[in-house]
Image (cartoon, rainbow, N blue to C red; front, side, top):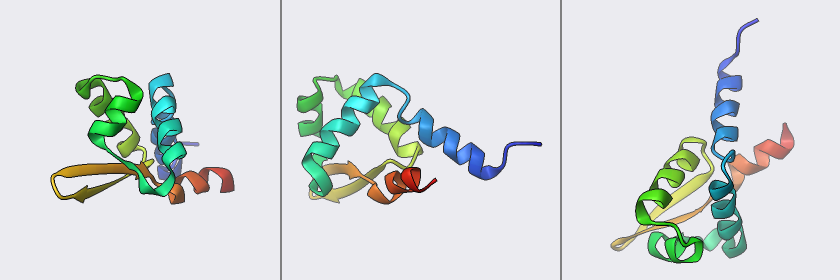
Length: 90
C-alpha cells in the first residue's frame, strides 16, 4: 500500500500545526475569530520577529489553515475554518 494524495495532504496539514509557535498563532487567530488580524498586529500579539512569523505563516498557509485578505496596504490573516472543520469530520 502506498500513501494516497489524501494522506499527503493530511501530512502537510498536520505539519502546519506541529510546532508550538504555530499552535500559538492558531490560538491568537482563534481568539479574534473570523475578523482576523493584520500582519503587524499578529506580530505584536505573538512577539515573533517578522521573519519568524512569516516562516510559520508560510507553513500554516501550505497546510490550508490560513486565509489571507488584502485590505489596502495590509495583509489580514484569519483561520480557514472550513479546513479546520474537515479535521473534526475525519
